[in-house]
Length: 250
Ligand SMILES: NC(=O)c1ccc[n+]([C@@H]2O[C@H](COP(=O)([O-])OP(=O)(O)OC[C@H]3O[C@@H](n4cnc5c(N)ncnc54)[C@H](O)[C@@H]3O)[C@@H](O)[C@H]2O)c1
Image (cartoon, rainbow, N blue to C red; front, side):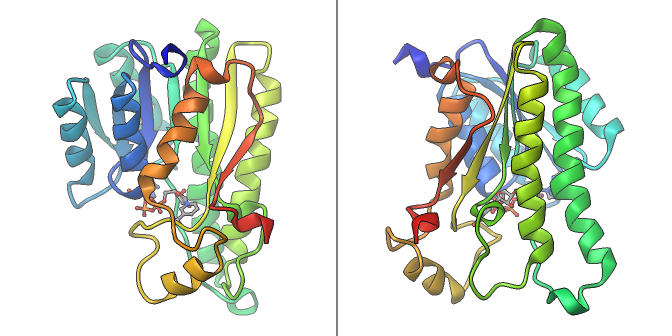
C-alpha cells in the first residue's frame, strides 16, 4: 500500500537502543525510511539498531546524547540533515519509569522523571519542529503510555503516570499550534509491553489484567507508528492512539 510507504523520508527515533524505540526504528526502516537512532544507551544498543537498519538497505546514524540537552538535540538534528537529508519524521520515545510511594518520594526522583519524560519530549519536539516548520512538512509521534489515561492498579508511580498525561496534553497543544503549518503531532500510548522496562513475575499480573490476556511485543507498536508517520494519516493530528490489547476498556 503506497499510503504507508516511507521511502524518501528521514526519521529520528529517540531511545532507539532498546525496547519499543528499537522496534519502531527498525519498523520505520522496513517501511522505507532512513532512520537516525538517538539515545544514551551504553550497552551498544544504538549501534545494534543502526546496523540492523543498514542491513535492510536503508541509511542510519547512531547519535549519542540525552533528550534533556538542547545542545545534544540540535547537534543530532544538524548531523541528520547533513548526512541523511531533511528530517520529516520524529518519534520521541525516550522515557524512564520509577516506583516510589507518593508520601515518601524524594523530590529528586520526581524531577528526574519529569526532566526526561516531559522536558525531554518538549525539547525534542521543539528542535524537530524548528526544521520541519521551516519546510511545512513533518510528522511527530510522541510515545506516552496508558498510564497517561488510567492509573495502573497497585503501582506507586504518581510521577510517571502524571508525566505521561503531560506528554498526551503537550502533544495536543503542539498539534494545535502547528496544525496550519504542515507539522502533525500525535501520540502512541502503549499498554504493558515486553521490554527491559517490564521484566519478571509481575508480568503475569499485567497479562491477566489485559483483556487480550498477554503483554504486547515491542514490534506491535510499529504499525500504529507507521500509520501516524505516513500519508495514511494525513488528516490526523492531536490523536492519542492507545495500543493496549483493550486494557483501558476494563
Ligand atoms: N514497556 C512498557 O510496558 C511501556 C508501556 C507504556 C509506555 N512505555 C514507554 O515506551 C517508551 C520506551 O520504553 P521501553 O519500555 O522500550 O523501555 P527501555 O528502557 O527499553 O527504553 C527507553 C530508552 O530510552 C533511552 N533513554 C532513557 N533516558 C534517556 C535520555 N535522557 N536521553 C536519551 N535516551 C534516553 C534508554 O537508553 C532506552 O534505550 C518509554 O517512553 C516508556 O515510558 C513503555
